[in-house]
Length: 229
Image 1: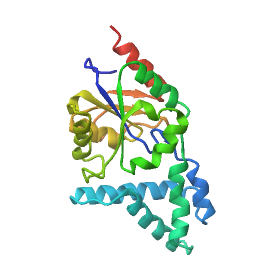
Image 2: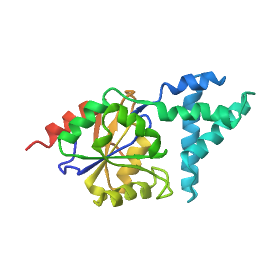
Image 3: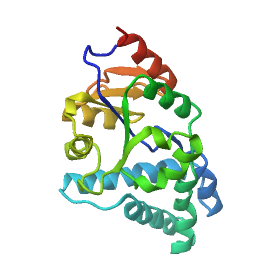
Image 4: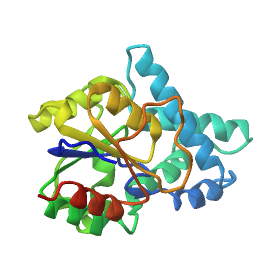
């Protein structure tokens, strides 16, 4: 279900929420790691970014991701040069959007929602993906956490998005596949919309989402039905 108050701005997470990261598995395999190393690497990168944020510090996604991958390669007895690491991480700029992203965002735009992205990575990494999907012009802002200097789910990152959009946090909703992102946004005052792409149970330890949908198209239609006059 959704709340009675219609959000003005929809804040979209990028990694996994909008981008299909599965092609990165081939890059991990190409440098000698197993394909499931992508999951380990991504989780460890988030862990270290969260740890720095908890310590009131900050480092860029690329910096942390490079460090994690360097350790993984060395631990497996593999070449860990800068060129090898770059051959893997450069894949982020070549990812494609999930099939539901273009029609879903177009429908949300038609419904009058302002659309912005907010990522723990670099906003520039996804520009080509959005351009190829034909949705770049729909995005009012493409934000990352460099300026607030705190990774999501710290409240400062969500408040930064509200400041840029010149609106109140409680007039915004965060869309993400990550429960920790939904929880952080809700604690900061936003609504939380959970995209359950993998059909996984939502953790009970986190604040629940205000709305759950399997993809962006379904979410758009649920919002259309919920807020029609």
